[in-house]
Length: 185
Image (tube, rainbow, N blue to C red):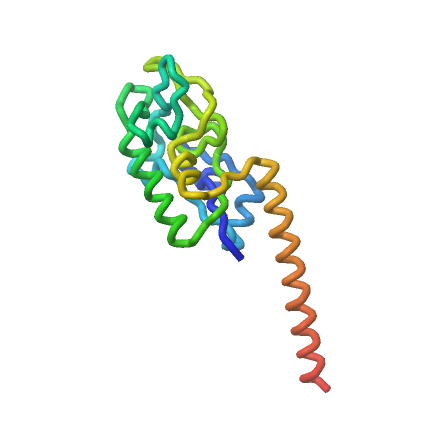
């Protein structure tokens, strides 16, 4: 059974910028069953918990995570500090985990400047807003052929995994019952 990469905050780990989680019970169950591997790119990149909110600097352009990786723009926090290096380093740490476990799928926290998929946080020096595009880690994972699941796709993945586990569990139960019956004859 292949593994799926998930945002650690969705798995109940209090690691978002406010030091909170966004627990998704299905994600948590997959982690508990050793099907999902939780990661927080920002923490892996050296940022603390909690930390200042950050976004992709995208003044007049619609810059996103790809542009950060291509060094066309930077990531800043609410104090104006450049945290680009942390975001890029964290993305590459996640990529190492992906390679180590041969992961092909990921379900990441929507809108995050690291994990956002389709929409992420951007803006100028004084205010942030949602922009089109991916976060830094998501952009790097896509470049490395990791498929990022939408919420609906994740739900389907979860249902398929649970169905598989139930079938496998039932087969094992039948096997052990048959074996037990043979031993007691």
